Length: 91
Image (cartoon, rainbow, N blue to C red; front, side):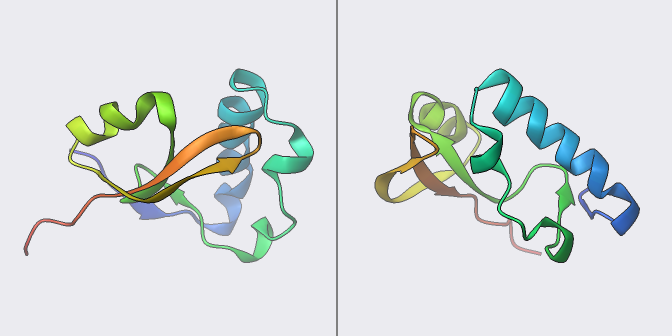
C-alpha cells in the first residue's frame, strides 16, 4: 500500500532533492530548467501522482500501469514527453 500525502513545508528540501537526483543527476536536465522559482509557493506530493509527463521511451511502461496518454508529444528540457493520466478507481 502506498500512502500519498501532500508534502509539508518542512519536507520541501526532500522533494527538491528527489527531483534533483532524477532530473539533474540521472537525466542531465540543466538545473536552470528543473527549477522555475515557484517551488516555495506550490504544493508538492511525496508519492506517485495520477498525472505526469512521461518521457517517450517509457510511455508503454506507464500504460501497463493503467495510465493513458493524452495530447501531442512535446519537448520538455530537450526531452520528448507525453502527458499521461490515470483515472482514479470509483470510491
